Structures are given as structure tokens and as C-alpha cells.
Length: 207
Image 1 (tube, rainbow, N blue to C red):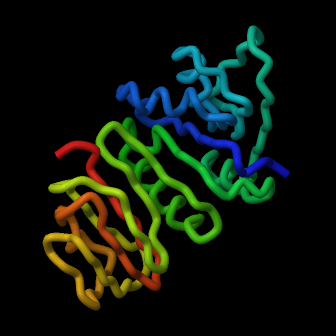
Image 2 (cartoon, rainbow, N blue to C red):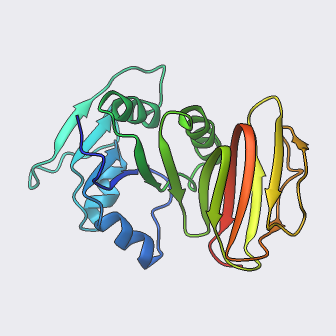
């Protein structure tokens, strides 16, 4: 069993962050999990992962570092799914996720479906140079800043949403899989979303 007081991060094989704060956030993690080929990018950036998980068809072995390698060959799942399965098995229930988007649109969309799938068993937050992505199920308060762009998406059949401190208030608003709740605006340094179905919340890092 892992120690959930530690900071765990998963690095995917998307666009590696250029933002120094995000890179430092990765570096300050207590335990870094690489999904297959993302280990190459980490090592190129002088960040050594603790473990590499996946089918290992992209990872270029680096014998100069002592890294645990866990081959998982199941072709019915992506390396990201395999990694999250491993986290659940090891009772890692809080994660930061990086490089989940970019490079390949189908992988980016697939990663969001996977994040949604695990949002009721893992407390995750995903970061890119442009966006913070957070799941919401129930009532949740989000740290924000005035004029921050806020977009809501659901992969469920429908989601009934209530909000506070958003410019366009959502009051028993029914959201279906669509772009009908994009680009709302935060009115303050926080906002609240309440939803009984799985929801994914996007917050812009800059306006």
C-alpha cells in the first residue's frame, strides 16, 4: 500500500508542459509514474520517474538510471488505463496528471473519457499549459480568480447542475454531452458547482 500523504503524479505522453511552475510541480512530486514513452521525455528533462507502466513499445530503456519497469501487455486498455488500474490496486487515491493533451487529438479525447471513468474512485486533477481540469461529483468549491474562463462538460446522458459565483448562473441546468456550458466566467476568487452526475470542469490558467 502506498502512502497517500505523498504527492503522486502521472505523466502521459502528450505535450510536456513548458510552464516552469508545472515542471516544478512534477519535480516536487514524491512519486512520479510514467506511462510508457513519457519516460523518455521525463529523462530528457532530467526528471527520473519512480516507475514506468505500459506495454513498453515506446520506452527507450535507460540503464543509467535505476527505474522500476512494470510491463502490462493487455491491448484492450491504453497505458493510461493500465496505470490508473495500478493506482487503484495500490490504493493511490489522489493524483496530479500532466501531459494529458496535445500531440494527438484522439488520445486527448480518449484521456478525458478515461479520467471521467475513474473520477469516482480517484481524486485527480489534470494540468496543461492552458488549463486545469478537475472532476466534480456532488458539491465542490473551486479556487479561482476573477474573469477566469470556466467550462463544464459531461460524458453522462445528462447532468443537472447548480452553480454559485459564475457570471452565467446555472440553476437546475440540464447539461448533456455538448458545448453548451463552455466559457462561463468566474466572478470572484472561488466558485461552487453542484452536480449529482459526473462532471468535468475546465479552468483557464490565464485569460
